[in-house]
Amino acid sequence: MSLKFPILTADEAAALIPHGSTVGFSGFTPAGAAKVIPTAIAARAQMEHEAGRPYQIGVITGASAGPSLDGALAKAKAISWRTPYQSDPNLRKSINAGETRFFDMHLSMLPQAVRYGFLGPIDFAVVEACDVTPDGGIVLSTSVGASPTFCRCAKKVLIEINRRHPAALRGIHDIYETEDPPHRREIPIYTVSDRIGSELVRVDPSKIVGIVETERDDEVGGFTEPDAVTNRIGHNVAEFLAAEIRAGRIPKSFLPIQSGVGNVANAVLGAMGAHPDIPPFDMYSEVIQDSVIALMRQERLRFASGTSLTVNSALLKEVYDDLDFFKSRILLRPQEITNNPEIVRRLGIISINTALEVDVFGNVNSTHVLGKNVMNGIGGSGDFTRNAYISIFTCPSLAKEGRISPIVPLVSHMDHSEHSVQVLITEQGVADLRGKDPHERARLVVQNCAHPDFREQLSGYFQSVRQGHTPQTLSAAFAMHQKFLMTGDMRDVTWDDLIPI
View (cartoon, helix red, strand yellow):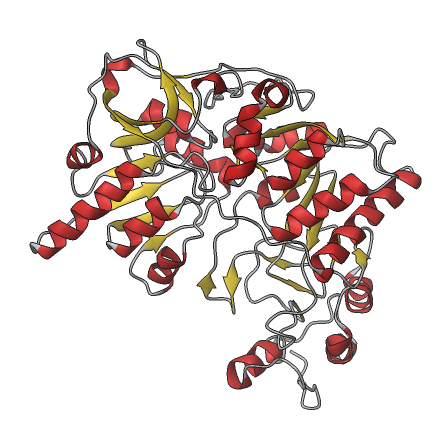
C-alpha cells in the first residue's frame, strides 16, 4: 500500500463530512461494506444532536449493509434519506415510522442514476479496500456493488484499508463501467467467465483525501441449517429444472443460474448440486453465498460471477487459504454488470428468487408487509425476473405458525407482475404458469402450491367470480389480510357475502 495519501483516524475522516452531504458507501450486503468511518459518523451525529445542532447525511450503497453502517447511522438518527436497499431492523423501523426517507430501486439502475445526476451530487465516496496504489488504483475487498461509480462521481474519496482482506485479492475483481447514452455500446460478455474490465477501481489520486486502516470482519450473519420446508422447496426446484432438461426446454448442458439470498436460496442451490440429472453449472448472480463454496469444492459449480462474496467468516478464511483455487472460479463485478438485462437475456439465465407474498394469478410482492411496511426492498430480483430464460419464485406455503398464507387472492403490494413470473414453487409443489390464462393460473397455484389449510378458501374466492378475464373482485380481494389485521389469523375467511366488482 502506498503511504502517499494521508492516514487518518475514523473520527478524523468523519469530521471531513459535513451535515447535508450525500455519501456513497461501499458494500453489497455486509460484504465489503465500509465499517469504521460510518460508525464514527454516527458518533459525530449523536454529539451534534446532543449539542442541539442538526447532522444528517444522504446514504447510498450498492444494496444492504452491515450494522456498523446502516444500524449505527439509523440509531444515531443520522440518515436523512436512503437508497436503494436495506435490511437493518433499526433502519427499517425508522423508515416505516416516516423518520427516514427511503426510495426503493432496481439495483442495476442505481449506478447509472448516480452518473445521470438523478440523485444529486455525490459529495463523498467511502469504500473498503485491501490495497491502493500510488496512482489511485483501488483493490476492493469482498464486494464491488456501485463503488466504481461512487468513486468516479464523488468529489472526494475516503478509503478504509481492511487488513482482514489480503492484497492478493487483486485479480478477483472485474471492474467495468458502461458509457452513458448516446455513447453506450453492448457489454461484451458472452459466457459467465468472460473478463472485460480492470482489476482496479481507478480514481484521480487528488480526490483521495485520506485512508483509515482497519481490521474488521465482514458482518455477515450465518444461515440457518435447512429444515424440512426449505429442503422440500429446494427439492421441488431441482426436480422442476431436471424435468425441463428431460423435456428439451433447457439445453442438456444447462444454463447459468441466478439465485437470491438467504436460507431458501442456499437450500435450493444445495438441492441442485445434489441432483443427479442436473449437470455441473455456472452462476451469474449478485451474491456468492455459503453454499456456493461447497459446490465448487464438489465440482458441481464450475464458475460464479457476482458482485459480492457474502459468506461467513470461517468460509471466507477457507477461500483466502486457497485463493488460487477460488480466483480461477470467481469474478466480482459491478452490480450494473451482474444485473444487466442485456446480459441476463443473452446468457439465458434461470432466475430463482424468494417472494414475501404471491397471489393466485402469479403477481409477486417482494417488499412490503400488509402493503405498507417495507421489509428490505426489491433488490435485484426485478433485473433478473423480467429478462430470465425461466423466472422462478419460491416461498413457503405457511407463515407465522400457520396463521398466514403467503398465497393470497391479491398481493397487498406488487413488485413483479404476472407478465414476468413464470413459475411458482413452494414445499407443496410447482405451478408452471407459462401459457396459462388467469383462471388456469389460479387453479394451478391453489392446487399445487397453497397449503391444504388454505386451499378451500382460496378456491372459493376465485370460483365465486364467474365472469371477467381475471376472476377478481375488489370488494373481497383483501379479505384475508383484513381478517389477519382483526384477529391475527387468516384462516376461516368465507365468501358468503361476496359482491363482485
